[in-house]
Image (tube, rainbow over all chains, first blue to last red; front, side):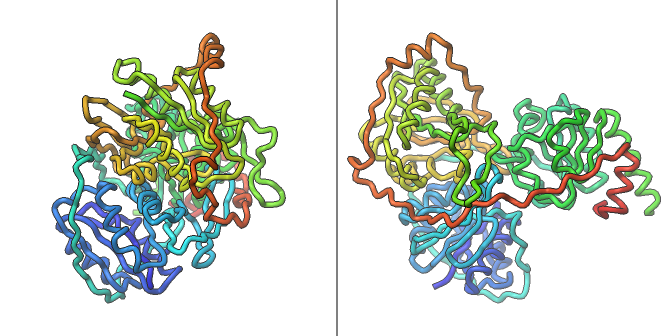
Length: 317
Length: 249
């Protein structure tokens, strides 16, 4: 018996969450198998097979699987599930969409969004937007788990020598049809894995003003994030949102600009190593979690920050 | 067309949650309880679909203690037609809740089931997907736009990479995101009217569903707290601290 990880990818690249899942899986069992469902994914399967601790990659390669529709991926997992003690995936929108289906089909209670593994059946997960941590033990014979990617290291992408085995499955789906996808393409690092994140809130006042953040992000090689208020106001797209119902980020440096710091936002960033808050309201709750707080008008502070970073870069050169 | 909307009674999102000293859970005594926020979006969306003439009945269901009636009443005051409370005094996990709602759906035969995408208490994000899998109806999670057509719906989903649009055939299950709409407040006359709307209270035992918890909660504790930092006087000092003290730039 071993442990299965469902790989997240876009048929071209493996998402970083997959490497976190393999790492987490290897803390439960040394025999890790990875399932790749997609189209034209031979190369992805090959890359995963050489990751540390990967013993085998199961590859289901078919044009019908080009889009990750939950209703067609779930039966694939269910079909092979009897070989495993645990099935793991990322608590990203990809994994969240699929895993509860697998769980109910196998009549096993899913454990969502774990941040720590105590033993093979005991895990820690945040509840109430991270205001409490619950240690839970699963009594089910097969454990269905999603992990919070940022809470686990990334497995080494080399050193393994797993095999790649092609599997087959008939696709049956007449009810759900993929229409289109709008992905925001950015040259900046991915929000959930960036070393530096600069986020804006309602204080930015407009979509136009987010450019002030972009300028600084470019200088720090940072990703740009946003509070829910800024996304709701339409300043940036939903994929920028950091918080309880958005993304959870754990960068080395998180700069919150014009963000008051509602608990729902803190849930997504308070594990960051260093937090900087820039806000003109000194009572803003964001200052309670900030290592460095600056009470200032962001429209004055951001251009100053930009020029200070320039000075720094000049000195370094 | 009938729409079934599932709602959950949770600690109000503005309440600062406190962990009990004995580690058995969080303090729920004398704490304000409300409808789970994304469930409000689900109720609102059902109302808008009905107001557009594409639905004629909205049934609200909740699974939980007697007091969950209050949450159903809130939905009725917003404009839903009738309620069903499946009563249980025990803690129920999403696995059990989804089986219960699926069973009621088989009786009620709605064409659309709407739920919030996630409950803000256990943060599980499971029940809608589970209901969809049990019923073998298509699912549309994290919906930020729902366009109902004759025998299908076009749904925009919020995903980590941006937005995705899918078409699902009726009947389907959708989980609602916070940006789907702006939930209305119930007016006083509607709150009064809601008191007369029927709520069918059913005991969970009559459904013959195994609701025994599968997950044992060993303890609940406070997360490690962050030490409050310092205030800097200007941007130059900030950059200096980040460079030489924190060494992160």
